[in-house]
Each structure stands twice: as structure tokens, then as C-alpha cells.
Picture 1 (cartoon, rainbow, N blue to C red):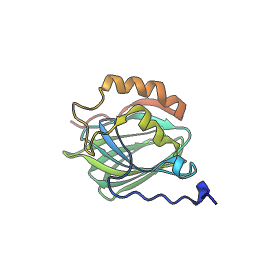
Picture 2 (picture 1 turned 45 degrees about the vertical axis):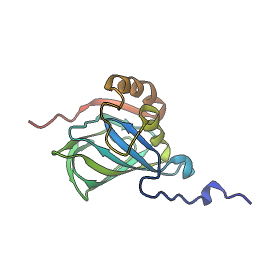
Picture 3 (picture 1 turned 45 degrees about the horizontal axis):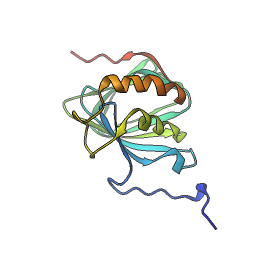
Picture 4 (picture 1 turned 90 degrees about the vertical axis):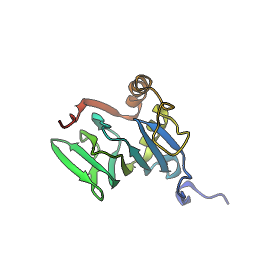
Length: 169
């Protein structure tokens, strides 16, 4: 008798899951929505200093981040939070949010989404990572990526509602 999806156990050893270069960073998949009956998506994300998302809303998912290393400035609703190694943040569905990687080094965080379908967005916008490192000149151009975001994001319920968090002077 074949196992039902709800009985499927997902195990990823270090460096074994799919990896995508998107947003100037590396997204390493630990569990995808199609592996968890849509319940959960999990990735380890590495992004370089200065990376900043626009203020945006997810209409389908809640998100959570656990900061493994580095520093982030995170806006959630009207509040701004400074996150450092070991910090955790949970964002309910519909809360406008944005972040900026601060400090001199890259940031690594465990990103979780519930339900798990959002992780497909990053695969559709990005390109398969050639190696488990931040992309360089071999990554996708910003112009190409922005065009893909504009095409793909609405299907996933992602809406941009404001500018990124400004860089500190």
C-alpha cells in the first residue's frame, strides 16, 4: 500500500535540498508545500548586507523567521524591530512588513510559511543556484528579477504596498 501524503516524512541533510538564487540571496529548501500537504514551507535563507524588501503584504500566508546569524531591521505593521542572532519574529497573514539586512556581513535565517505554497514563488522568480553561495555575476540581473516579481507575485497573493526601509546614514 502506497504512503499517503499526510504520512510522508521529510528529511533534508545539509546541502541536500533544492537551492535558488533570488533577491540577491540563496534560498535552500528544507520542506516545500507539495511535500507537506500544503501545510508548511521552510527554507534557510542567506542574504548580503543592504538587501531590502519593499513593504509588502501576503494575503495567503503567515510567516516566521528565526535569525541564525546577522542583523535585520524589520518593520511589521507600524512597529520597527531590531533583530539579531537568535531573534524570532512571527507575522500573521495580512500584516504589512519589510526588512533590511544591516551590519557588515550577510544574514542567515530560517524562514517558515504557513500554508507552504509561497516557497514556489521564489523558485519561479529566481534561478537554480549553481553552488551553495551568494550569487555573483552569474546570478540574475536586477531588471530581469523585478520583471519576474511583477509577473508572478500577484498569483501568490503578494502585494507591494510601500517602499523599502531606508538605509541608515
